[in-house]
Image (cartoon, rainbow, N blue to C red; front, side, top):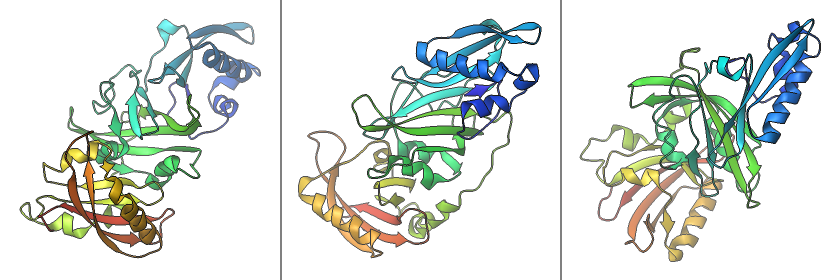
Length: 322
């Protein structure tokens, strides 16, 4: 919920969020009336305007829903004044991750455009989104939303992206929640707020320091057909990818298909990494149905002392050893 264009706030009870604004000073029941208006807006799936009794005055209040790509209300703006008087100072964009971990973006909502990265035209994989993230707070807790066994219920933190359109850094605040979707399977719904005008972006990501030094320091010729990434072992999600080869770079934007005969070897490798053992193996992948299989060679090392099991992964294609 965005109350009177306030800045970032973590998940909390809606009533408490309203109480933390200046509204209670208008009267003892204004926060309660605001809570009822928020619930009505979500229930009716449309903008709602009401007049609150604030002492001897009748205060016009507008509640505007922000719809996600599937038509569900992802956020609500509540402001004093009529809908025509509302100034959307904080740009918002809703998004939803489907069961394939593809992010679909809804229409932006705000007085100024949000980063051009978030287009409604094409879906994004989570690794492709993270590719543009220069800094993110509690990254592993975000990935925990996609845990197939015990997904985290919510995540609400800062991230900094490099906006290719403006060549500037944008400070974003993302609130995400794991829910059960219409098909009875877990999905993740979220909303991103652009806080750049309110809070300067930070500039450090400690987890990225553990990327393979072989990729980071190799010359351009040595990195041909080679890349490096971090893997979350519970979800097998790749994040913090470094890959300079143009043949492999597009792989970051699609989910691979594994050859059926190689699935067992991949599962054994993940189990070994989770148990603290390094691995080296090969498998065949492709990114389009009925396309040719490409043999990928993989070397992985477990990383210790993280809240979730992680591994550093190097990969290269056949006949192109690192």
